[in-house]
Length: 212
Image (cartoon, rainbow, N blue to C red; front, side, top):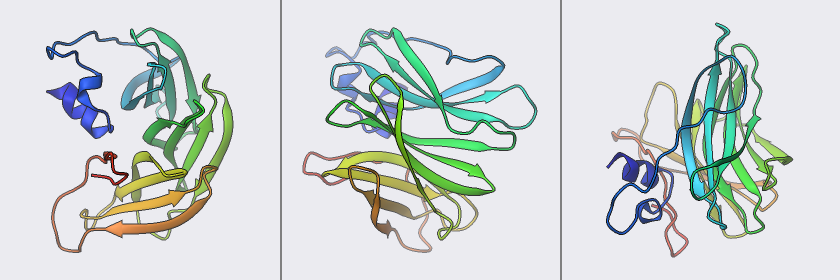
């Protein structure tokens, strides 16, 4: 059940992770590269076109300053770790969050995240299939008080970035920003009504191009 819930949150079909009989095929535990790591938590996952698994998460260091950074890992279809990469700014009192990971038609990897260092700006970074940085686009979210990255999805020729409220106040909104294929921001919109209760925990692309 937990695996199915995690798959749905990340926009995956649970049948891609479990065989027809519903039995767990395999499970792997791995540690991202680096020294002085206090803990690491995986937060999003997707399947690459070749069957590899792309995973992203955050690791925190033993330094007393709340220093953390985002890691991206590529695993084979059988769960062997092919590589791990660190992205973000691992400064003291700096908070990095990851909202989503995906793959474009050419096999490049997209990572959607946020770095809070004075101000909380979000970003979309493109990596090669081996994890080398290609470009990074930063988006100012200071006009919307305290939002957190939730999900990344392909949307036509570009990408849809989804956010949820992260601070005190109403939690009933879902925010969406659209970019082109190069990460250049375009339109933005919000969903929800003030006064309603509840929170969005995941976004899943539908076959007709819409989202649920």
